[in-house]
Length: 430
Image 1 (cartoon, helix red, strand yellow):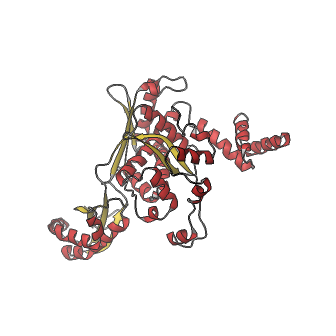
Image 2: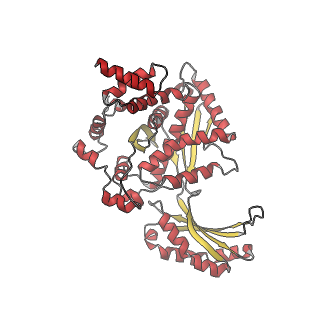
Image 3: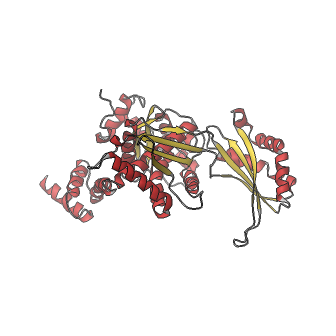
């Protein structure tokens, strides 16, 4: 049975919008009104950041074919890089044939830090801080009672003692961690407010001097995992048996686990998907990126974030675990029209569901890239999209873009000079 979304990538932009309406993903309205709804008004942008002179646009596309925890999703992705959305969609299509992605996030706590120095007998003071647990929680909650009413708030308190380091000329630091459930918000302001609210009390308790109270973007208490399992028969490509492709993918994962030079590029591919989805949903790409890359270095060496192995039945299993504290309310999510649309087309998910979707996109992107690398090579898909970019840079418009890009892919060299020559020839013949 055909779907309005069939051959989505071959449709014009207006046809794609109409397809989304026909499939029930967005409400029926005039296409021009739909496009206008994405515009960020000056009255909003001028209050989002400082010294505004305009807005800077990025393409917003849809990752197709995603089946996550038994539910279908079209995943909005904002990115400037060709092939990212196509690769994620292709990876998701293959995983879909094997049953789709499974995602889990057991808890979603943000971490607030109060950092003190000049704390004498730090081990004794650690015990003393924990003796004042209830009082500290009460002070933190009093600073932000609304999150407590919504079922969130401080879930735990811990103390880390960071010893002095003569080589780095650093003193001992006494660091108190607040673990906060921020519910549907990313929670930076909530956690910052709570951390600052207990600084004075901690100075009195420890006799130390508080340096700062601030959240940590290293969200190790908000780990999300996406995984899939594929039969080798789904992996054959370019004349290679599925078992050989499977084994090559595993080996590609292994080199990224032990070689940081490969791991950086491996993880960049994951972040192509993660950051595009995070940005599209109005969340903080810098915070998520910093935390995820720190997690890749948790062993002391920068390593791959994803893992691939062969299970006892010969199936390829792929997994990705990343720290991901993103929200569905607050910040730009509540005021940016694009973010409101993306949340809506995802079905207005809760924060844990959204984290799972983003993680699945990162894994789909990574799987697709690895499969291409160990079979056709990464350039085959890239060059097709590069040809379009060259055609547009040469001045091609409308149908000329597809015509010139096809000619470019069949010619050598594939560069701007050649694109300009082909465009001139085409126009002279038309």
